[in-house]
Figure 1 (tube, rainbow, N blue to C red):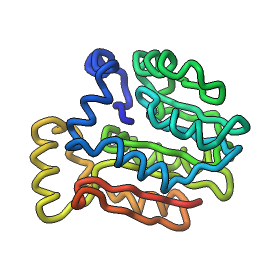
Figure 2: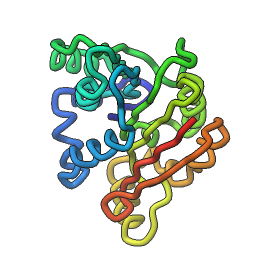
Figure 3: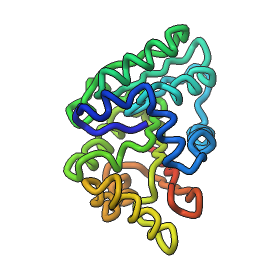
Figure 4: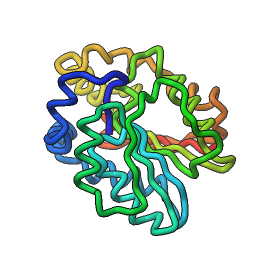
Length: 212
């Protein structure tokens, strides 16, 4: 659940209300969209899963149940207030940890995770950082690992394109470059073998599954 690559006052202030805000911005489809994306990730018992830009930890808590006591979930986010909210909400989950990390900087993990999940984060990154984060995700995955990206559709068409562009002009103008981001090509260049996409809500959003 997405944050910019740098901390800022907006995300610090919005942390307690983040889930409600995103629910409104996704026309009430927030939870069902994310649950569908988690189902596509298909976390299994005993797996290690990274929730990249984990926000308030909602998805990490769902994945926690799926991987069970033998599994591990790491939520990674740059904004300390998001980490604080997640730790407080899910302090009873023994198999989940939340860490503060700028995902645009080098990671300490190589061949470590079975799966990576990220939602509404790639579009928030500055254009120059997007490919690097995908490359780091590839390196952090085990040999048969996979990543799921749940975000706006990077190349919407028809009415979905009109709605998306209006929304970005009003609220996300600094991230308009996302609509020229060759996400699938970038995933393949990073080394992912198979890339599948699932348009959601008429193509306004998209779930992408890429397997290493």
